[in-house]
Image 1 (spheres, rainbow, N blue to C red):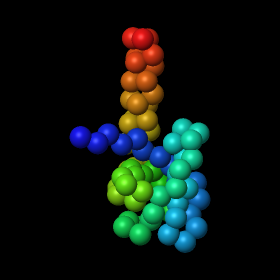
Image 2 (cartoon, one colour):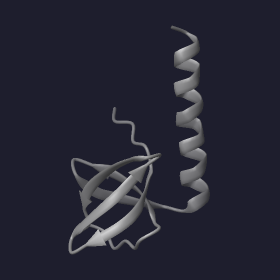
Image 3 (cartoon, helix red, strand yellow):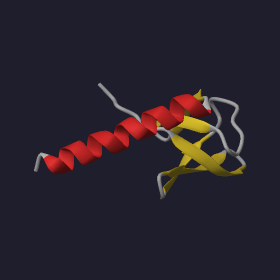
Image 4 (cartoon, rainbow, N blue to C red):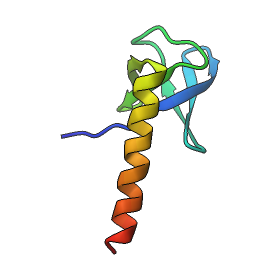
Amino acid sequence: MCLAIPGKIVKIEGKTAEIDYSGEKRTANTSLIEVNKGDYVIVNAGFIMEKLNKEQAEQAIKEWENAGREDERNR
């Protein structure tokens, strides 16, 4: 099973997007799906695979952050 964290596209140059994951920036290929700056996306194997609406993405990010805090408390 693969768990993916949504990221927000902050820049697109050609077929490469720069994606912000809560402050950590990574790049991904845009050739499989049409995207724009500001879109929230899911990336797998270096390719953008899915676009999420803002509400879905923000909820998923919030859940990931909560899971991380819970993990820290259990250590």
